[in-house]
Length: 178
Image: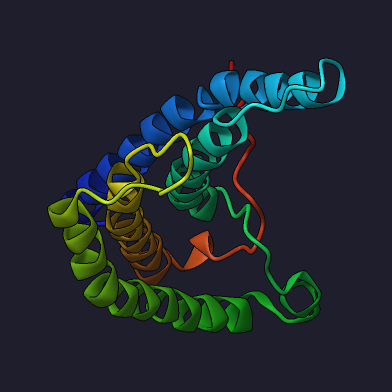
């Protein structure tokens, strides 16, 4: 693979890995918030007006920001039966088609997501619940995550295009996340 492409691939993958690890820390907020919501509702019969909404607002960015690195790790749902039934050349062709579809999907969604997020920011949008937190920060994560996913798809497509042996269809060696 050309050095410039390797630098791009490593840079995008490293950025998405760091964001993945940082996003994973959101579970340290989501789980206690949900636990508090359940305990306060069912044990003390005093439902929380904010805990479940906080967990939901944090889970959105968590879900969105972990997706790009999962694409690298081949952690998304795929057609495993088809990939294992065909040879490596056909698998490579399928992957060379798959990644441009993902890139096109990201571009189309970005066209709609950027104005959506900016409008929410301009209005200072809130949830209109009794707690009423701002939700525009959560909506700003949508175009960011789409951009990161699109960049990872470009990086993976270039890797498969320039290194035919890379299209094995097997997931990368799992990384232990501590």
